Image (cartoon, rainbow, N blue to C red):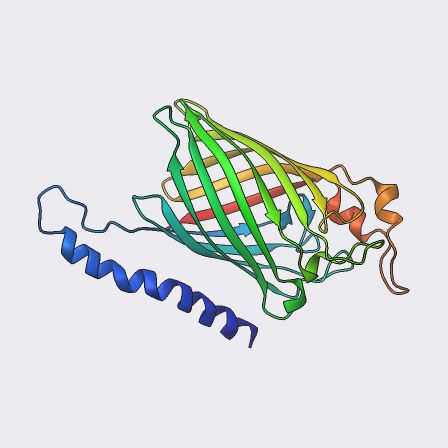
Amino acid sequence: MKIRFCIMLISACVAPIVGVAPVYAQDRASGPGMSALPINLSGTASLLSQYRFRGVSRSDGGIAVQGDLGASLASGIYAGVMLASVRSGPAGDFGHAEMDIYAGFDHALGSGGMMLDLGLRGYLYADRSSANLVELSAALHQQLGPLDLRAGLAYAPPQSHLGRDFQSGSLRDNTYLFAEGRADIPSTPLHVHAHVGRTAGGLDYTAAYTDYRLGVGASHNRLGLDLSLVGTTISRNAALAIAQGPTADPAAIWRAARSAGVATLSCQF
């Protein structure tokens, strides 16, 4: 039932994009040198040693699989869907499947190469609808030779998954600030990358915390391999101080948030 739900939702999102592509192809294929397909389709399938979301494991430290299918226009409009396997554990209950539906507009600011990316993303869980979340984002990014830089903000408005403030009783929101960079190593298939983010609000687990990722990747044709160190600033004492049920593992959040190596094997299509 969970798999059928995911397939139906992906089909509903992708079918309009795929269905309109042949129409555009016929309109644009009449002139020499013109693109036969103005919609750019891309996809990635990945196998991960574990799935970390903003530094915290959502696969209970176990292996995860992901798939991403996206479409973009030359105007900068894009949309897509991402599927990920998750594993419920003492540190969090997100069911067994996560589906992210996203859309946005990425366009240039002036002629200096700076780009502004405005996006909307919905996080859906097939058997845990109470964990569903909607998030808005804005990011600036620029390519400087082999270096790709990006910084931005993701904001989740007040909603039930984020819980309520203990004093006022009102729904909480969540803010995520991040900066990241990637640099290709000339004359090699290698690249290095770094990411740092700051979570504050309903997704902070213990209190506002910082997550980080440092890694190196390699690519050959459509295959990619990435090895990264991922972690957070959530301390062991803070994690152990979180209220736990009588049968819960008191060290679960610490294991999910502490530094760990993550390997990712991916294939683009």
